[in-house]
Length: 232
Image (cartoon, rainbow, N blue to C red; front, top):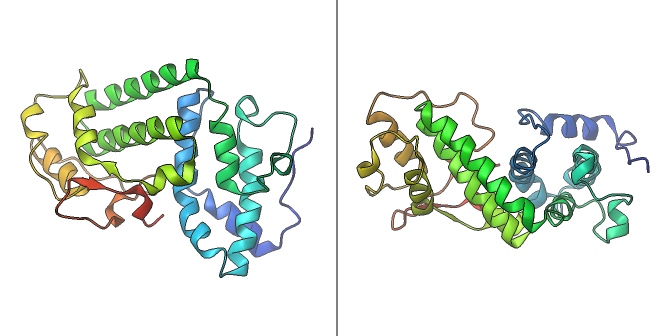
């Protein structure tokens, strides 16, 4: 079945859709890679979702993105032989992502989480703490997504900084800074900066559109941060 196109939308809407994908992560054929793409997409959808009911232009972009995202999902993971409307979800981008995630089998979950951990191991060996922490954070989000299969709800919940620290501590390639992991930190950025400076400073990524953690509002009474509160 031929997939739908968003080419009938006006120039500004089509331009907005194309601009939405700026910085899009490259995916290979693995499910782990595709799920990293899913959470990247879901994070960037948040401001459009919040504005679509009061902004007609954003509403058009929202629908066009639904069609575009549906077309971009690799065929082997997509909703086969149907279109989103047949699922009763319309072209709601979140629901299209949910439909894809819902098709992940129990047998695929373990392999996916194992692949994500191995990716973090490779990053840990490079001693780039910012990238390592972002990778571990994404693994925690995907773990939760595979449990609840709801992208909006998943990214609206807070990810505990302690859970990220505990996951880093289990990595075999993590350098000898284990004792410094559980020092109290006000938030994710402070944690990464402190740990990076324990050895030698690691430059922060110049383009953090993949995970704009620096925009979070912190609650100093907790060591946690919330993806749902990021300015994505």
